[in-house]
Image (tube, rainbow, N blue to C red; front, side, top):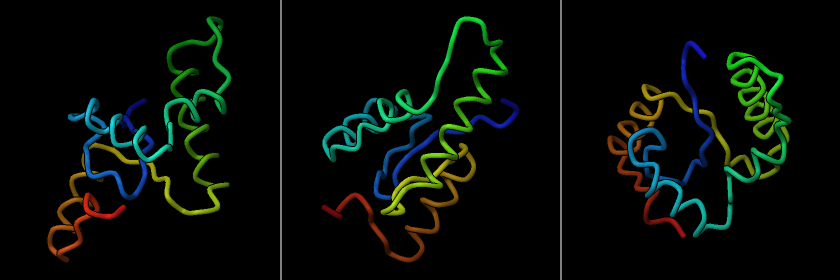
Length: 99
């Protein structure tokens, strides 16, 4: 993938690129199990090239977002995550405190 992306939820304050362990702990504590959800959606095989596998994973992310009835999932890049966190801090929004 030319622009690496990750699937996250809009209330997870942790950077899935740089703070994956904390991100995953938050995700599991909330019961989202995003990694497992994505694994159920995406069909990978050893026959796929790395690019094909990356494309399939990104399509799976897009599908989860498209059919998300609660609007909690979002696809982020390193840059878009940082921008979103900066916007939240500028507006005083602290997603980490929402339960």
